[in-house]
Image (cartoon, rainbow, N blue to C red; front, top):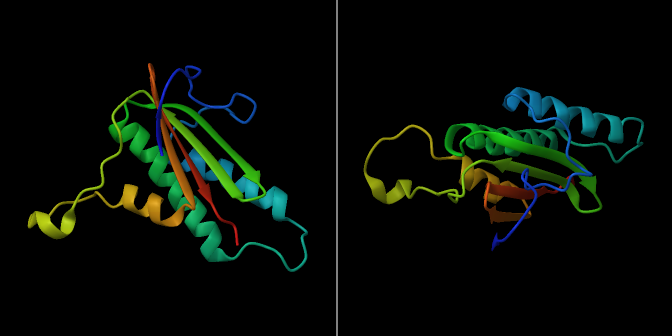
Length: 143
């Protein structure tokens, strides 16, 4: 889903936003801390390694793409909801992510796998474009 409209400068819900990570590793650490603190001590319903890896991969891809293609990370939020992990990443570019068509390109290229991975691993992905850039919200299932 793509929306256009006015949003706060960060493009994120300020109640869920924390400090902006300086890199993907800091973002992954924040997500891991959130998951660990919530699921610690819950008998039988803990997270599998695959679910954690998926959540950390989506986090890495969104934050790395904000730095690499989006003019810099301007906001970051991670929160647990009834549906899973909600990640919100804001950057300074209004340009939408592009999924490259590797099968038909014929050229050998490095990269281009991140956005398709995000879309595959997340149950929902939305993009909101605002005057200062865009924010992407991804919902990753935790089951």
